[in-house]
Length: 331
Ligand SMILES: [Zn+2]
Image (cartoon, rainbow, N blue to C red; front, side, top):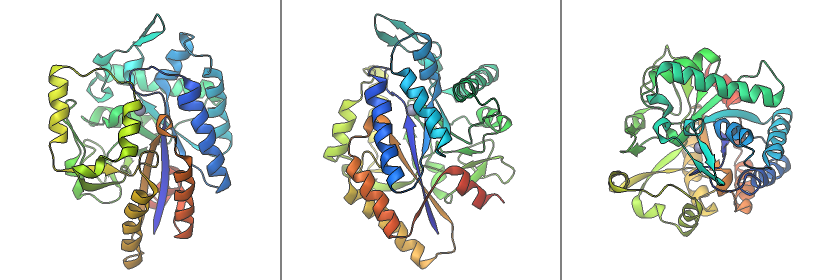
């Protein structure tokens, strides 16, 4: 049985430039309308650090719209996951521009006390926003997928009541941040973990539901849609070593292609999911949670999202949130 979880990173990513209304609020509003039409729900991974800092610095008037939208998602049964880009917490806002703190880019590489502080601060912000002092996000996704080294952050999240992580994309490799999710290629559709997110550990409290990927030859990543969206993202200019690291990442002949409902065309999506549906027809007893990803900033092609939901409905694939799939694997 296949169940598809749509997860969307609800954020301005990159260097902090751009408006909340255009890059977060408006696309999320249109996405909600489509999901309502299909009576389905998605998981919104709220990047809490940037929202708190934007609010504190009065940097974007649309923050109230965004906060209100998050409250509505919560009351309408959308799942709110925790997403964190810790480089925001020490950010400085000067002359209309953000200077982010790249020393705190990878939450996993910070000292335990700092990790505790950041996680608690982020959960506190969502609780205040929702006016729900007992709210705990059920799922987590690390900024830039970085859940290595795993042990310290996994323990802190589990202690706070988070039960699901979805930071892994099998086969992933980033030389600059020492991210290596190639060992996870031999794992199944989900697995519990504790000390190393790549290694199944039956004692682990957290369950990893990786973002669905397929190994494809490099040229397949170079579609017009993907390149166009990539160009839109304002990022830090890469210098020296960073450029070399990036080049090393792309030197592999085969790359993991993520199931991305914003960046892929309907043809690519139906091809990728079609193969999974075929496998399921042959072996329907195996539970196959399939996690799709998107970013509010990349949401331009709403027609494809609508067609995808229609395709899933036609093929009898249910659209769920993490609470649903978790219940099926941990009961
Ligand atoms: Zn992000």
